[in-house]
Image (cartoon, rainbow over the protein chains, first blue to last red):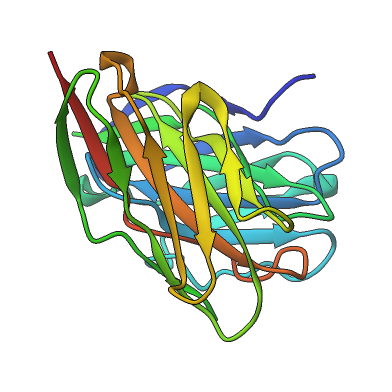
Length: 113
Length: 114
C-alpha cells in the first residue's frame, strides 16, 4: 500500500518568510510524528499526534513552529518567520497499534537563505 | 522514560568485513527495540525489530541483532558488509504500550570502504 508521503520534497525560502510542510500518513495510522534532522545529525523530535488526544508539543523549538492535524489524517507543520538555523530535513512518520514502530516519509529539505 | 545510547558516531569498515553497531538502552519498564537505516537523502526504513520471543532477530539486507536484557543492549551485526550498506543506522526503543515514549538514539554513520 501507499507509504507516508511528504510535500514538497525541497523548499527554498528567504529568511523571514513563512513555510508550510505537509505530511500524508499511511491510511488508518492513528499516530503521527514530526522530526527535524540537521545535516549528518540525529533526529530531533518536534511534535506527536495520537488520535483525538491533545498533541505532545514538547519538542517544538520555539513559538514560530506549529503543527496541526486535520481529520486525524493529513498534518501540516508551519514555520513562521523562518531563520537560517531552521534549515534542515523535516521528517514525518506514522504508526498504528499495537506496536509503536514508525513508518517514515522521504522528508522535506528546507533551505532558508 | 527510556533513553538510547549509540556510542559510535562513525564506523568505517572495509567491504566484506564484519561489522557491529552498538546500542544500549535505559528503561524502567519492558521495551520493544528497533533498528532503522537511513540511506543518503532518504527517510528512515525499518531494518529489524524485537518485540518478544527469540532474542536473535534477523532483518533485511543480511543484518541481525541480539537483545540482551541483562546488558540492556541491542547490538546490530552483519557478517560481511557491502558498499551499499553505507548509511546512517538508528537504534530506537519504546515502551510496551502503544505510542509510549518512542525514543531514537543519536545514530551511527557506517562507511563501507572499497
